[in-house]
Length: 134
Image (cartoon, rainbow, N blue to C red; front, side):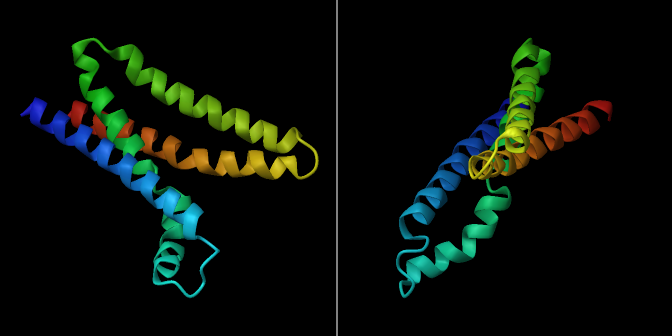
């Protein structure tokens, strides 16, 4: 049962990453260039989901998979992913406040894009902790 759930989590991670990448590429290609195209309309409707939290699902699945592998001895990888995501979020946030001019917009966009992976990692730790305590 445990390996079947791990395989399902790995598939969710891979499919979620592929789906998010596909949506991002479609948005970059058709986002604002073709206003009369049906593809541009669909992509514009998915834009909010893409920007707000579409990449939280792959990070949730990957972090939960690493947490489930905790008993197998890969404690370092489970903690490392969360630490890296939060360090990047902190660096992007600090850079957005300290950079002058329009360069701060770039760092702000990166900081806002880092919130969803951080939320996915935290939610995976909470789900794993609730299951582990049960």
